[in-house]
Image (cartoon, rainbow over all chains, first blue to last red; front, side):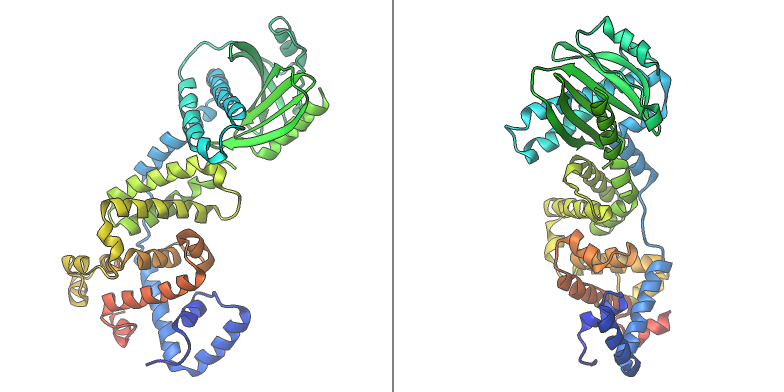
Length: 251
Length: 171
């Protein structure tokens, strides 16, 4: 009924999916072939009908809300500021705990195996940590004040630096109990996003950076000078790397 | 990569694809939600590239799994005669129904899922053949032939002929 050109060629031409050479060739053909010409008109009309009828169905507000509640619990906390700051820190601490579990477990498990489970655990840990609780720390951008606060509480020389000039403002610090021991947590702010840097003493040798992400949270972990560092945030991985380098070269 | 940046911009696309694959909004809401949660769990598996295609691939897989479990017959039929008759979607009755949106919706729903999805991805979502191939895990050549068959079949359902003059008259 129609010309010899393959049907899919006509559709590819209509969908602008042909190479420039084929497009030119088929274009010349269409000018002479009334079958293909009228077919293109039909295809165009069909597309127009589908678009004019507005049959695209966007997600309902209910679905969006459900997704926000289930997938983005942290969005509610990052919007609020000071009063919930420590809750956020607790949340980050919980995430950090899971990250540690990941680091410890990773040699024995295949990546795929724990991935899904870990994500679920992070959600649980995150949600649990949003519960009100007593968390104490120091809110200050003064290096000396923060370091002084830590000096009476930890037994290692914690490097405390404010990198506000480089875009990482020191916000404070606190202690976290991790595997039964005290761990220092330094808080930085980067473009409105919070970054936690956890530091604890280790006997292990220096270790280069390892990175990972879970549920939109990034972490980078490294060892230097008998200390282990782990920075956790939902910021850009490049930001974490920049902060890691700043800490690394100032320790 | 952050979940908000990767996945949230494609919630509409996710629901729209689920709605057209499953046909019922309530089912689509549940399955789209499940798929987005899965995307969230698998976010480490995303190694850059086209985030929409990645999300839609997960949505599509979740929809097919759901269909296999709940409505396996829909996946085996080439043309949904039952639905076609049930909805009285003959050209005449559709013409009487009048409402263009309703007509097109019912016509699309009579197509088998594999034709419906390429049409939805191309015409509603504006995906390229390459993106459709990535989302549906079928070769580009098959995407082309599926699209051409899907359009042909849609012409038949809408106007009773594969791209005949009637289409023009009815416009």
